[in-house]
View (tube, rainbow, N blue to C red):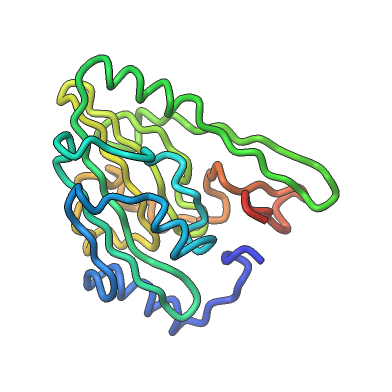
Length: 205
């Protein structure tokens, strides 16, 4: 069952938000040499509501200007963030944007129906143009910010964001009130409803 279906008590929700507000309470990893996307998929699995398709499979360590992750397993969910800043020359930037533009996910329903979601391109919500795979569905965000003039791409995954307590606020939406909106109406590449919003199927169901 998708984690958004589970009914959180007020106390559980407060604990999840306290995790992000106060900083990393569990596993913190930093340094380009430790970047391993598959590690998070294996350890945290479906709790991410993502297979981190937006993040690169591997990196050239010398091009990484920042890599940090902080995840904690709470009562019901895994909460936290992962930030990867990566320097690109013009050719690498163009190649990576082509990869990002092509991202999609096909969701399968138990009765055989399928639906394919494409990545969303957003030029308005952030300080840089963004390729978005999750725009807040189930309080989860995943996007790549493209700083073309600065020659870098910033990959972001974050769950249960509290803007005032988030370490990398410059990489959040410019309108911080967006984080208070109904998350079940938000865009996600990883989920689809085949019954008008009564239930949702995940990419890995």
